[in-house]
Image 1 (cartoon, rainbow, N blue to C red):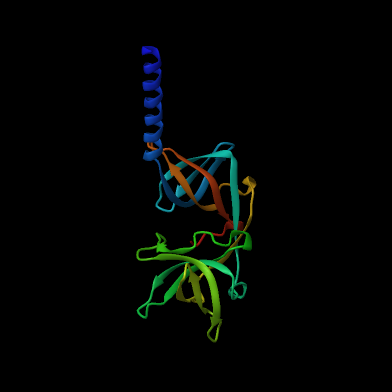
Image 2: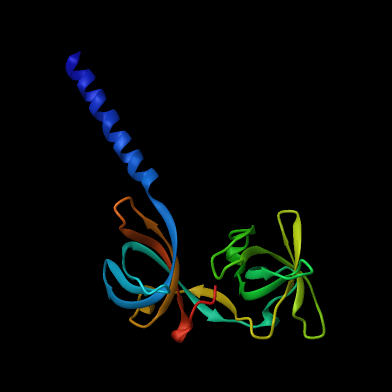
Amino acid sequence: MIARRLLLVSALCCWAGTAAVAQGSQMVRIRGTIDAVSPTSIQLTSREGDKLTVVTGDNLTVTEIVPASISDIKSGTFIGTAAVTQSDGSLRALEVQVFPESRRGTGEGYYKYDLQPGSSMVNGTAGDVVGAAGRTLTIHYKGNEKKLVVPQNAPIITYEPGNRAMLVPGAHVIFSATKAADGSLSATRISVGKDGLVPPM
C-alpha cells in the first residue's frame, strides 16, 4: 500500500512538473533574417536586432510569401490586413494578405497587432470593392464589418506552399514560435518571403 501511494505521489509530481512547464511557455511572433540553417534549427537576426536560435522539427511546414495585386481582391475573397484607424473610423491598410481558399477563416476577427504602434489586424471576407482606383472595400468578420482603404504603397501578398530548401541565409521570415520557460524557442510553421521579399505583415 505504501509503495502504491509513493508511486501515485511520484506520478502527480511528474504531472505537476509537466503542467508547470506547459504553463511557463508562451507564443511569440518573430520577424527576422536567416543567418544560418541546420537540419534541426535556424539561426536568425530578429527585426529588433536580437540573435536567435529556433529549433525546427521534421514536421516543419514552410509557406512561401509571394507578391499579389489589388486585382486579386474580389467580393468574397478572404483577406487579412494590418491597419491603422483613421479619423473617420475607417481602416488604412499597412499591408494586405490574400488568403488561398484553403486557408479561408484563418484568424478571422479584429484585434490588436504589433506591426507598428497602434496597429490592428482584421481578417475577414472582402465585400464590394469601390472607388475610382478600386482600393476601398468593406471587410466582413463575425457579424461585423470595417471599411478598408488600401493605399497605392500598401504591399499586397498571398501564400503558396513552400519547402525547407527556401530557408537559406538572407531569406526573410515571419512565424510564431513557442518560447519555453527556459527561454528556448521552437517552431513548427515558418513563412518565408520569395526571392528576398520582406514579409510586410
